[in-house]
Length: 272
Length: 201
Figure 1: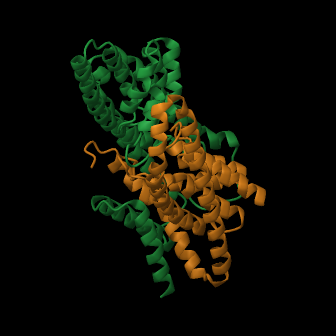
Figure 2 (figure 1 turned 180 degrees about the horizontal axis):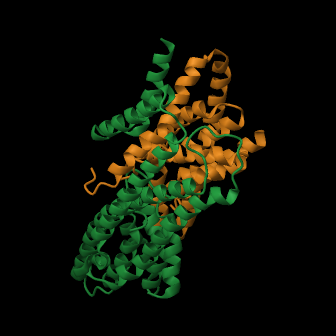
Figure 3 (figure 1 turned 90 degrees about the vertical axis):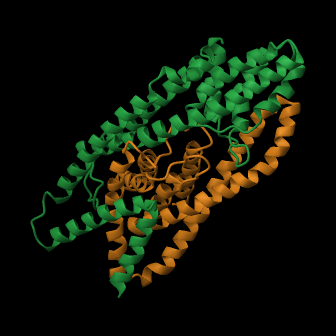
């Protein structure tokens, strides 16, 4: 796969979900990413392209970043399909292509969901909040008319953006190459990285930072307060919500519903 | 004022595309979208606060499989637009969260109905693969337009509701909304540690 072809697929990969629908999920985007490669493979047999496209328009659903492994692997498999010498061979290759597409998309989705949504996104959130607090951006309570430089404000979101995208873009770019160069024995390159260890380490770091952040937030929330009724009211509020949040999480009730319920309960209590 | 609102709605609709349909660089996550919208609105700190609160509150719902979480952009944009019109952040945030939940149902409906014309499109792609570009651009434009319409309508509705209700809101109700708003970061922070648990549900 040439460098320019890889670049083309890389930029197209940002539109994988442009045609997301509930029946075939990312099929349109997947076909869109693969078109340049298919054009190259079938350049001497362009009549085949519409038939091949129909295969790419079948159900496809995976994590948008980890999908890069699928592009590379599917490209490699498509080359084998295009080289089939007989109808039986062609059918076998297509069956193999289908199996690889299904298996790889599920595995990649599982890794991507755990790594990007489950770990990296909350990790960069903790990092951003830490930076804001460290730079003296007061967002935690009622804001006064104080002046905060724009640089301090935008440093944290910029850092979160850069950290997340540095990893995501690296995986997007490398995934195409690794997927193309690997075979089934290495799960089309997925086993080249120790995903479990990466996720484990990132989560460990995340717990450490999250605990630090909570302690830091508690310190900032209570530092100027003497032990009086205001202090007790705040302490009760914090402990109550932390405990309730743990319980609702166990019951799998999303936080938004906890917040809406709190608004309704507080309003009810205040009114009556 | 109207120009600012239109700019904010347009920017929010553009940012919402990043959530699912294009790029996924997470520029649409509330901690980034909040300060950006706040900058356009004229109060960056309000943008930061709403952004952090919205992200912490929506942290526990991920877009896994076919799940469509409440929109972080809608939850951030609506409070800020309402705030620019003089409505308190704690009321705006509550309405923004409700609108974000409604948007997830709206988006689900859109994605379900979209397939009807996508079937026709697939047949066209089968005949002419070059048409993929046009179909995807059309799909993106439609998503942008629908989001813009949703955010504008929701903002207009919320503004009208608040204008009607504000004279009736007592100091006690105001206090209740404010208290619940201040509890948001604690609800979110308590979720952060379980998020990093090694065995996730």
